[in-house]
Image 1 (cartoon, rainbow, N blue to C red):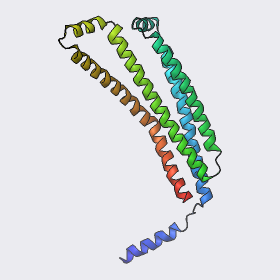
Image 2: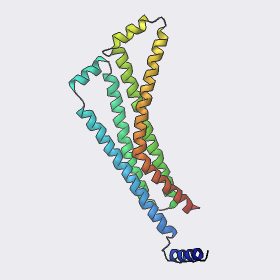
Image 3: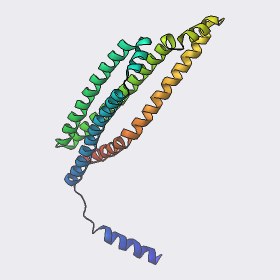
Image 4: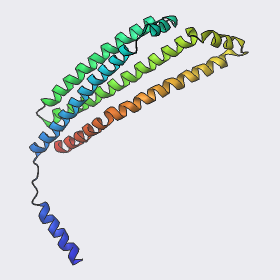
Amino acid sequence: MKELELLKKDWKAKESGFPKLNREALYALIWKRSSSIVKWLYYISIAEFVFWTALSILTRSTEQEEIIESMRLSTFITVLTVVNYSVLVYFIVLFYKNYKLVSYQSSVKELIQSILKVKKTVSQYVWFNLSMLGVATLGGLIGSILYGPESETILEMAHQRENPFIFWGIIGLVVLVVIALAIGLLLLFYRLLYGILLKKLKHNYKELIKLED
């Protein structure tokens, strides 16, 4: 027991020799970390925009356009593309504004509000992309079923059934499962992509709350 007490006293003596951060220094540290995280969120959103744009351009072909035309999805895809890219550009601008906002906050309260705004923006961005994927997948599957290469076979099978409602119910269930899987995979991707940064931002937020108390 004597040795344990001596060890505790020795540890306390060493601990007292470490420099302690005051409130201002701690705030400056959290501010710097938060600003860096938001900057990375901005960079990632640009990289993601460039990636999907490049993928869309590289995979485009005359054959693909003919298939889309045959499934009567040209107008649908054009409208969806315009809406998608317009909103994505809006979010990129918003991420940049959030970065600037966090970078120039001078008080704990303002930084807390900025962090909450950043988290809200990221959530909206993720849910928008998930919604767009769901709409695109649904449109593609409906076009494929009604006007795709196998549409005649599918419609004939439905016509031959005694109760076509059951048949279409099964088709609808399959469509929902495919959409759920597509959204689930993208959600997992976003959790990995943004989850770590948001977790760090949440930690900074908690530290700021403690400073404010």
